[in-house]
Structure formats: C-alpha cells, structure tokens
Length: 255
Ligand SMILES: NC(=O)c1ccc[n+]([C@@H]2O[C@H](COP(=O)([O-])OP(=O)(O)OC[C@H]3O[C@@H](n4cnc5c(N)ncnc54)[C@H](O)[C@@H]3O)[C@@H](O)[C@H]2O)c1
Image (cartoon, rainbow, N blue to C red; front, side, top):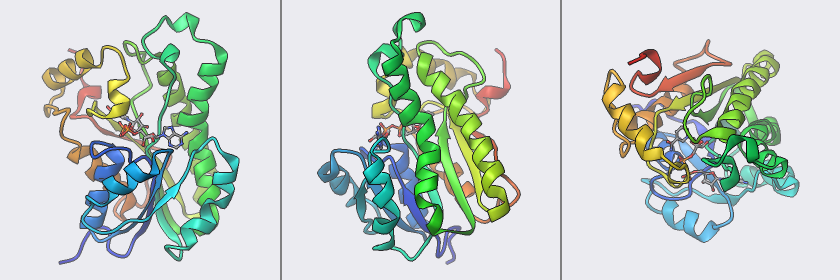
C-alpha cells in the first residue's frame, strides 16, 4: 500500500507528551510512510520515552528555539539522521502565566517578549536554521489558534499567534521562489499541556463542541494531525502563506 508521505523526510518539533499535537503528527506521518526526526525541548529523556511509542523509531535532537547555539548546530545534527528535509513542523508555543488569563494591561514586556520569541519569531528562526537542508517542493507547517479575534484569557499568546500568522506570510513570500511552501494549521482546542495552561480553557472547549458545524472532540488530535500531514504532502502544491482551519468549522459560524 502506498502512503501519502512515502519517502518524505520530516523534522517535527514540539513532542512533549503522548497528547502533544506533534506526537500525533509524527505518528500519522510515519503511518503514511515518512521518515521522522524529532526535536525536544529540555526534558529529552521524557521525549525519547514518548518517541518509543511511535510506530517506528525516531531520533530526538535537543532544541530550545531561543538558544542560538542549538539553532546554529541544528542542520548538522539533522544531517546525521537524514540526507535532507522535505518537511518541517513547528509545533511550539509558550507564554509565562502573566500573559495568559491575567489582566491584558498588566503583562510586563519581558514576559511578552518571551511569548513572542518562542511562539512567533521562532517560526522564522527554525525555518532559517534548516533552510540548507530543505528540498525543492518542501513544506513548512506551523500550529495556530485563529488570531483574527480576541479570545477569553488567550491574551498575549493571541498577539503572538497574530504575529505567527504574519511571519507565515513573509516566509511564504521569501521562500516561494525556492518552491518552499509555508502554511499554518489553525486548530480547534485539543487537550494538551499547553492548552491546560490557559485559564478558562474548559469554557472554550465546551463552546467548541456545541457550535462547530462538524462537532469537535477535544481529546481527538487525529483531525489536526491529518491536516498537518495533508500540508506536508504533495497534494496542496499551490498553497502557501495560508492558514488552514482544522476546527470543525467553528470559525465559519456566529452562533
Ligand atoms: N492544544 C490546543 O488546543 C492548540 C490549539 C491550537 C494551536 N495549538 C498550538 O499547537 C502547538 C503545540 O502545542 P500542543 O497543544 O501540542 O501542546 P504541548 O504542550 O504538547 O506542546 C508545546 C510544545 O512547545 C515546546 N516548547 C516550549 N518552549 C520551547 C522552546 N523554547 N524551544 C522549543 N520548544 C519549546 C514544548 O516543549 C512542547 O513540546 C502550539 O503552537 C500551540 O499553540 C494548540
């Protein structure tokens, strides 16, 4: 049987637990024939243990996207495992507590700067770090939470996501001539470590389930994982600078 991602060499960031969106992207990608290399932030032993639950072995490289030495050595380390890359997944986000749920007007700049650095700027720095390895036709995919509107509690993370959406358009513009596509998947709420750090995420989850035209299950990362894999495949060859919703259609309805 042929898989959607047969022969694709992918670098996937953002696996922390078995619930991480990145874990499910890696799982589905391997099921579809891809060769996967992971990066892990900090707790490498934990990430390596989680990686063992994937259908096929995947090496783990340490990457803190705010660490310039990690970024500079990344392509060399990836080359030890694969000869090049046909796809990269950025599934990374972080905001200090002051930036989520607390009064929007009180977040200090240092914390906002961290949020933007890790969650938006790093989409560019990760892409730049692996650029020499990217093949013609390669696909770069990031994870978004629709930032066209203000959400309860999402606060400065929402601002960072708006930045991420803009970074995507500029990367697409710059890398299009190299035939490299850059897109985001705007996911509905999925229960992960990052989601649990958002105060009031239960309310958002509840609303989503009842309002999304297709319905929505917060404990089912499969639709989001499949959407990322679709963008990593050769089947959206003219799509770049876009945000693709995997949200049950929630964004399309008012009430
Ligand atoms: N879960 C949701 O409801 C949801 C919805 C839409 C978008 N997203 C986005 O999906 C992405 C993945 O989040 P998730 O929900 O799977 O949660 P998660 O907690 O499993 O993943 C977040 C990842 O970010 C990594 N990270 C944090 N700081 C980092 C740094 N400095 N360098 C490198 N990696 C770092 C963590 O190690 C972790 O692997 C994030 O961008 C998140 O905003 C999540």
